[in-house]
Image 1 (cartoon, rainbow, N blue to C red):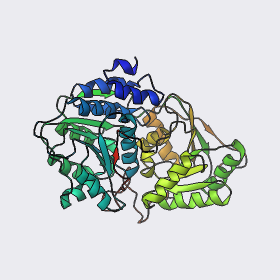
Image 2 (image 1 turned 45 degrees about the vertical axis):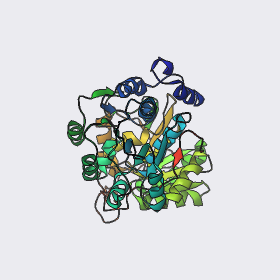
Image 3 (image 1 turned 90 degrees about the vertical axis):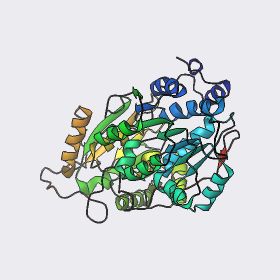
Amino acid sequence: MQFTELGLKAELLRAVGEQGYDTPTPIQRQAIPAVLGGRDLMATAQTGTGKTAGFTLPILQRLTSGATDRLSRVAKAPRVLVLVPTRELAMQVEESVRTYGKYVPVTSTTVFGGVGINPQIAALRRGVDIVVATPGRLLDHVQQRTVNLSAIEILVLDEADRMLDMGFIRDIKRIIALLPKERQNLLFSATFSPDIRELAAGLLHDPQSVDVAPRNTAAETVNQRIIEVDREKKRDLLLHLFETRGWHQVLVFCRTKYGADALARKLDKAGVNAAAIHGDKTQGARTRALADFKAGKLVALVATDIAARGIDIDALPYVVNFELPNVAEDYVHRIGRTGRAGQEGEAISLVCHDERGNLKDIEKLIRRELPKEAVSGFEPSLHAQPRPAPQPRGGKPAPAGGKPRGAAPRPGGHPPQHRSGSRHR
């Protein structure tokens, strides 16, 4: 199947073609016709499957074809609301809107915390068709009466599982209660837990279900392996791997913000250009680090799970789990950053004695035993004693995906408003 067979208008096909795409991914083949037909959608899709274009393309078509236009639309009020868990994902989604909406008259903006609210207020007052928002900052606008949600025709919940993990369920329900009853609802999630299914049951009406990958499975294009090592040798082993294997672009995962900062400093001091990205970094620092990493100025980007959620790099060759996640599902999300769009990638996990329980949980989830090896000079001790794994500050493990709202600054930030009919790169 080609994109030309999906019923998209010429302006959208032109933008898609300029990105070098002619064949839709499985999620796009199934989601685009469903959204064009006005159906509610419940989609299971991992990162890297093309799901963002799977909803932005048909939404742009519906907005510009009159298919959703209400006779009594409120002037300048947004027609589409996309809720996402992090500022990085918000920017990624709106970038997709601008890229594919290059030749259609649709306006969009992002709304998220971490920066001043006044530029966002100005953008909303000018009027936009699509708002991509994190829940907390959107509710700030609701409270200040600077956003009007009465004309929303399409609601998208992207990475719904991560939003629930981050404690946004109450915010999401408050936002849904403010929307018109008659609307199209699209829900995307990498996994469907009982909580997600409960949310879907109250939100979706006769939805079309799309499942493009078996639940909680890793991409077949990712070569996964384990290197066993003592905890105190992990940093030196990681440096050894950089020095001996010619790595040039590596996303490294740590459990904690403190650990990410410490590891980035260690790498940088040893001559491996590195930066850390996590929730305590300013929006400017996170944006610069990600841009430098994509441009090849950084060899290593050290990230926590939440901060990495919006990272979208088509040809990322390596992911390293410096520490295994506390929640097995997060392993699948992490390694899904590589091996995208049919390209091969490599995921290496440095596993110490304390993490063997985490490894068993991961292997049970993905239903396979991962190959294990040791690197000469860094073999694990046969007499290692288990000890507590490092936890976020405060001594208590963070819930899956991060702290709930109120325990840490909300994800947020704001690039300026953009009109999709012109190019802003």
